Length: 431
Ligand code: SF4
Image: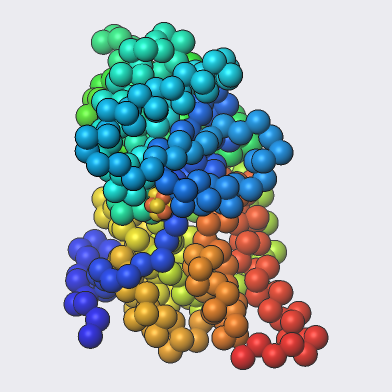
């Protein structure tokens, strides 16, 4: 028996299936793979086991050719009496690292789930190491443990730790805008130009490219979330006096326009100026998406819970490309932020939160969708059963936000369909 369907007030779909069974999602450590590229003077030190080290190595294998900005301090099994030694060892590892890499300005200790790491108080370790290395290096910590986090929650935990550490804004500071959520530099530059065109000043991005450029935060700060999975970050920024601007998320022409409009209205931008600045981008996005519509229109989509981007992607593919979401799974639904997205899904869409993987696989096989968006672990078996798949982790590695990326975002979903069609033409059995 499946868990009961729970009505979700205010959502276009009135069916949310809550599942609390086995789930198949990467842990929060994986977020380091994109976060370390974003902050160029930060270093992520995983405090973990050999398993964590192997995960990091295989998830970010390309980095062996570069000077890496992450590593794993491997903690072996100890009893509680041995924890003082572990702290000493950690201090020595950090000493060696900072001596060898004087370019590091922000050291981030990332907790994991082995029991020997859980016993270690990383908050106190971060405080102790900050005292030892200030002012040259600031030390933060967050949890990327697989018990508590899925891979995008790793970013949320990191940004909420960073938010608590932001400098306070002066009491008479002018209004400012923080865009929260790691974005590709190219996307950040595009948005920065649009905000300039709209006349919105004092715009900062979190995380910044350098830890020395952390924005100040206070009651005059407005926050625009660039990602739907930043519930803890939003709470931390609100705790610092900031106000969250609620909106659709900036995927596709519709989402990007709504997101920019929410900021423009908040900063009193005149509607004529908003139209003039956004219209060229809107036109380009509509054209780019239209050229991919034939491949996706009427296609039935099934989303397994993975990145928390699922409702946003489903809204984009439904509203701008005419696809039909059958089931939209998400590891967690931040209802306050995701509600406007759910309201735009077609009636009858099943939204599921959490996972019970075997039951969901049964529903998927029964639905026979044209395309499944899922984690890497489920993709191969589904492909072997003749179902086209898209890895959802690509959505956090690929620039997809904003007008200029709307066509590329659609393309991510046309490609697996085209590949499967090509395999069929070559006579490879698909089912
Ligand atoms: S944090 Fe936990 S789930 Fe993630 S790699 Fe380490 S042991 Fe595995």
